[in-house]
Image 1 (cartoon, rainbow, N blue to C red):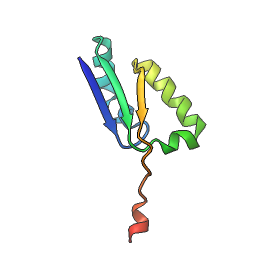
Image 2: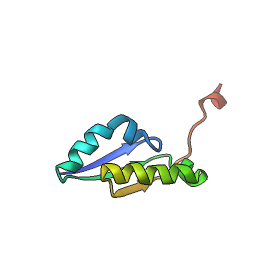
Image 3: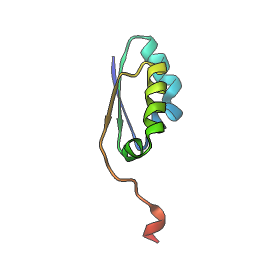
Length: 77
């Protein structure tokens, strides 16, 4: 089976669905992670490395970013 996981921020897929994804990938299913706000990845090299490591451990081989900006709720007051 194929799964597409769409999350708002980097690492949300690991924190929210890590166990599920690990289980699915051990069953030889395919998972693609789509990150809506991937701006943090490009601005923080350590985050990209951490994501690569966690995705490698889980078995995630496909990751895409939408490049949407993160909203600052405080600026809407």
